[in-house]
Image (cartoon, rainbow, N blue to C red; front, side, top):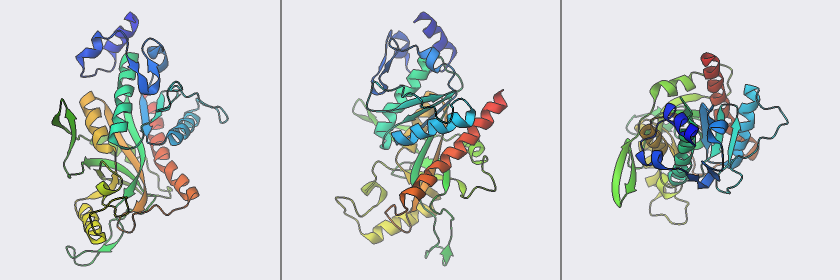
Length: 319
């Protein structure tokens, strides 16, 4: 434990003075603790943490990035390091951790708190966090009185959006949470250099668009995203269309449910992060995901390909 504390002081620092006084810490939702696992040995070399909603998707990404880095053979199956828990999964492929975070900021924040502490106790240094996800896009051609004629913002389904800004459900650049029954606001800060570096990993032969854009983050999939086909609804289809057009006019390229909390918490913790998502639908056309399973599977791999290129580039540069 003494050696672990020394490593932690050299590596990642977290803005919580209570952690230095703890002799053990049970990272319950991953089934890992400081006393049950040798965290410096397991995670001290981690440089990238990639998280996404789906457990299966992040397992697949772990094997994909492991193959790309040459640290996992094609038929090798990585162990789930969070096997003592049924909440999240955790895989390690060389210097890359891959974990799921569930849906929405509340679930994501639980995973992110514990991953940050895991790497703090491990003494990890210069770690970059990347959320790899799916989202709804905004950007098909449409007529709008404000612009007079047809407007095309070019975000077809299957596009990859790298967030260069994010706003909450009120269109504010702040994440709202409650501590001690009081509302607090934390700024949503996006690392522009990191976002640009990831988006620059595109290639001319890519069969999809890679776009830097603003992300609208909501607390709900149905009402919060102006969908009219949830279990309850108090808005009209015209309300929905006008709202999505308004988002478009404000430069929003996609809608998802984690970016505001992710950017704000990572900034508060002092770690670099980015959000890379593939669009499944165009919200100016439909509320529903209509592409078949094979198409969605291929689209899901697109942000993984881009992130893998970025990681490989960074590792080559650092050698």
